[in-house]
Image (cartoon, rainbow, N blue to C red; front, side, top):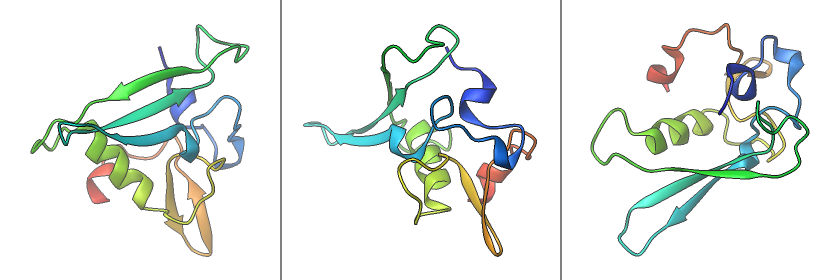
Length: 113
């Protein structure tokens, strides 16, 4: 459903709000069973190239596991807390400003958050 370019960008200045995931595309939703699901709004994908609709995908937590997708996304978003909803979803602090998380960065970055 998603390509790497929907999640990350090849260069820090290549972010496009209309085709890349932004911080506002993630929303937490508590449930009656105390399991907190995270919803991802996908506005652009291989099968939705003209952004004609929004596809909502739930991320279901895996409680107590280091492989929990909700925990991983929450940690990644927390790295740059003071971002606007239309800013890139995944940023990391880099003085003097935050840089966009590019596809060229090591996947081990998420383990450091």
